[in-house]
Length: 232
Image 1: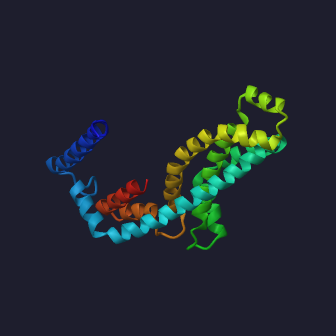
Image 2: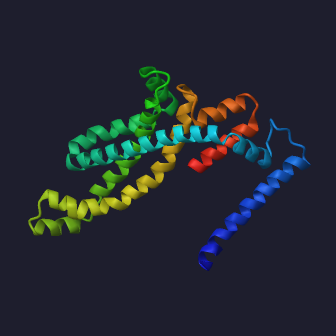
C-alpha cells in the first residue's frame, strides 16, 4: 500500500497544483472566457450538462468500442492468412499500407456519402480500418518472427503446420497482440472523435466540442473535453 501511495501521490499532487495554478492564473490575469475558461467554470458546465455529456460520450465510446472490436478480429484473422500464405501477404500488405496512408478526413467523407447522414457506420468503419492495420502488422510479425530453432525442433518431432502454429507461433504472437491493443485502444477513441468533424450526426464528443467552440462557449467545450478525457 505504501509503495502504491508513493507511486500515485506525485501525479496527484502535480494535478491538483496545476488546476489550482490554472484557476489562479485566470483570475489574476483576468483572462476572458473566450480565451481560457477557469476550471471552476468548466466543472460547473460539466455538472450542469451531465446528461448531454454522457449521451455524447456514449455515442463516441460505442463507435470506438465497436470499431476496436471489429478491427481486432479482422486484423487477427487476416494476420493468420498472411502468415500461412506468403503470396497473399505480398499482395495485401502494400494495399493495407497504402490505405492507412490516406488521411482520415478523406475516407470519412467518402464513407459519409455511402450512408445516410444519421448513420454511425462511417465512423465505426473508420475506427475499424485504423485498428485493423495496427493489429494486422503486429500480430503478423508475432506469427512469423519466431525462433528458427523452435521451428526446427518441432519439425524434428514431425509436427504438422497446425501443431507448430498452436504451440510456437500463437504463443509468440500473444505479446505482439497486447502491444497492438495498447496502441489501438487510444487510437480508436481518437479516430472516433476526429471522424465526427467531417459530417454525419452531430451527437458525439468531437462534434459537440467543435460546435461549442464555434459558438464561443469555451467552458462548455472544455466540459466535453473532460468527458473525452474520461472516455480515453
